[in-house]
Length: 176
Image 1 (cartoon, helix red, strand yellow):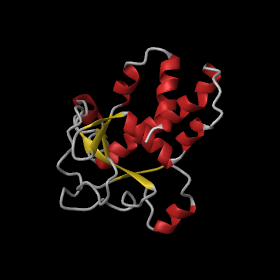
Image 2 (tube, one colour; image 1 turned 45 degrees about the vertical axis):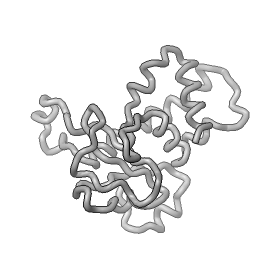
Image 3 (cartoon, one colour; image 1 turned 135 degrees about the vertical axis):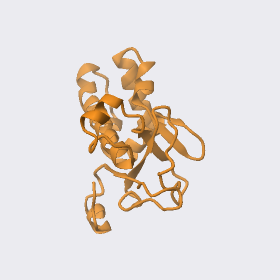
Image 4 (cartoon, helix red, strand yellow; image 1 turned 90 degrees about the vertical axis):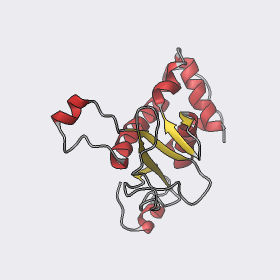
């Protein structure tokens, strides 16, 4: 997303906003809108979770700094569309947008697959920035210095049943 005015974000703050943190290096702050408190900013990493040097510093508060893989894009994709397949926080944010859509689709379908009661309405929290940030926290590995590498494959890999996946998402929404 790209908004020029903070008021726009505040008017529709119940939505989940993802934005690229910027690609100007560690001596810069997060770019707007990623610097807005209602937005989850993303940085670029390698497939192993190493944050790129082009990312901005770690923000101004104590919250986690998320990143996901974009730097080692397979050669065939880079050659196919070199102007599109570039690494950076914009690409990371697009990838996370897809992950977010996958998670929300899963959260939507889970109650029909697993008829468990959600009396507290926890699954509805997934549709908020706070809820999605909790899921991202659980779905990411700690890389030190508040940096977290978002890796849904690792999160779902050790959960062989639908019930285990359901419980993991449910548990993520309850946690800090």
